[in-house]
Amino acid sequence: MMLTRPLKVALLGCGVVGSEVARIMTTHGDDHAARIGAPVELAGVAVRRPSKVRAGIPQELITTDATALVKRGDIDVVIEVIGGIEPARTLITTAFEHGASVVSANKALLAEDGATLYAAAERHGRDLYFEAAVAGAIPLIRPLRESSPGNKVNRVLGIVNGTTNFILDRMDSSGAGYTEALDEATALGYAEADPTADVEGFDAAAKAAILAGIAFHTRVRLDDVHREGLTEVTAADMASARRMGCTVKLLAICERAADGRSVTARVHPAMIPLSHPLASVREAYNAVFVESEAAGQLMFYGPGAGGAPTASAVLGDLVAVCRNKLAGATGPGESAYTQLPVSPMGEVVTRYHISLDVADKPGVLAQVATVFAEHGVSIDTVRQQGRQDSSGEASLVVVTHRAPDAALQGTVEALRSLDTVRGVASIMRVEGE
Ligand code: NDP
Ligand code: HSE
Image (cartoon, rainbow, N blue to C red; front, side, top):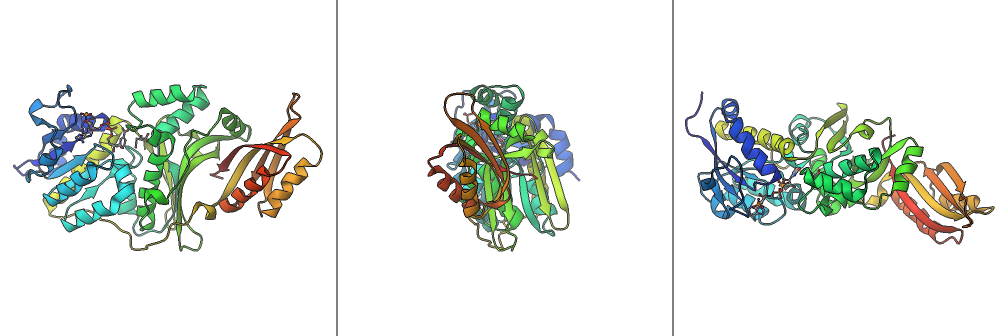
C-alpha cells in the first residue's frame, strides 16, 4: 500500500556524487516509490556555491545553510556527500537529534570517528548506512554487516581505491606517466577533493579501517592502519614485478591473527602474481576477497569510484533506510563486541621483494645472505645482474619466504650498514600466493 505522505530527503553536497544522487532520485522516483511503499521527495540541497548551475535541481531547493536544513524537523533521511570531518560530523549528529536517519559516503569520517556517529544513531533510534563509503558501487558493507554475522571472517584483502588502481593500470598498460594518469582520474571524478588522500593511501586506509571493524566486530580507526601510498612505486618496481610474473597493486589487507586474539590492517603497494584475480582488475574497478570459516572465499567486484556508481550505492541505502522508517525498524548498528586489539605492522607475516645496489665483487652475495639468515628471514630466490657500466655495481634482487615485517625491517637496516651495499632501491611485499 502506498503512503501518501512523501518521505523527505535532504541532500548535503551536490558535487560528483551528490549530483548523480539527485539525478537518479528524479529519473527513477517512481521505481523507488514502488520499492519503498511511499514517494521520496528531495526537500533541500546544501552546497557551498549556491550560484553554480545544477542541472535538474530547482533553485528553490538550494541552500548554503546545511545546519538549518538538517534541523528542519520534517526531514526523514539526510544524505551526506560533502566529505571531510567537519562540518560533516556535526551535521550528521544534528540530523539524528532532529529525527532523521543518515546515509553517508564519507569514509574519512567513519574511519576517524565512526564510534561517535554510531552512538548518536543508536541514542536517537535512527539508521546510519554507508555502503558507498567502501568500494563505490560494490555491495560489500551490507553483505558484511547483514549476511555474514553468522560466519567468522578471517581475512579481507582487496583493491579499494579506484584512483590508484587507475593510475597503476595506466602506467603498466599504456606507459602513461604518473601525473598524466592522476590528472585523468581526477577529471573522471574518481579522486578525492585532495588527491593526496588517494595516492598516499589515506583513502584506502580509511576503507580498511571500516572493513576491519565490521569484519572482526571490533573498533579499528584510521590511525590503527599501517599505510604506504603509491608515490614511491617506480617504473623499475613495475618492470621487476613483470619479470617475476607479477603486477603491482595498492592493496588493503585486514587479518585476524592465527591465535584469534588480535587483528591487523594495512595498506601498501604489493606485487601479486598475474594469475591472481586481483591482477586483472583494471581502471577504477575495485575487487575485494572476504575469507571466512564457513563460506570460504567470496569475491566482490565492480566499479570502485565515480559519480553514478557511488550514487548507486547511496540510493540502495536510501531505499533500505526508507523501508526501515516505514516499518518502524532500524538496521544494524555498531558491532564491536570482540574488542580485539590491533597489532602493529611488525607482527604482520608476509613475503618480500628487495632490490639492492651492491658492489660487484666476490663474497657480496654470501655477506647479504648472512644478514638475512641472522634476522631469521629465509631467502626464496636471488637474482644478481652486473651493470654493464663502469660503476662496479650489481643489482641484487632477493625474494624471501614469509617472515614477520619486524624481522624484514631489521634485515634491511643491517643491510644498509654494509659497505658493500650501496643502496636499497626498493622493498615491496609480495601477496596473493
Ligand atoms: P565533491 O567535492 O565533488 O562534492 C562535494 C560537495 O559538497 C559539493 O557540492 C560542495 O559544494 C559541497 N560542500 C562542501 N562543503 C560544504 C559545506 N560546508 N556545506 C555544504 N556543502 C558543502 O565530492 P564528491 O562528490 O566526489 O565526494 C563526496 C563524498 O563522497 C566524499 O566523502 C567522498 O569521499 C565520497 N565518495 C566519493 C566517491 C567518488 O568517486 N567521487 C566515491 C565514494 C565516496 P559546491 O558544489 O558548492 O562546491
Ligand atoms: N577517491 C576514491 C577512490 C573514491 O578513488 O577510490 C571512491 O571511494
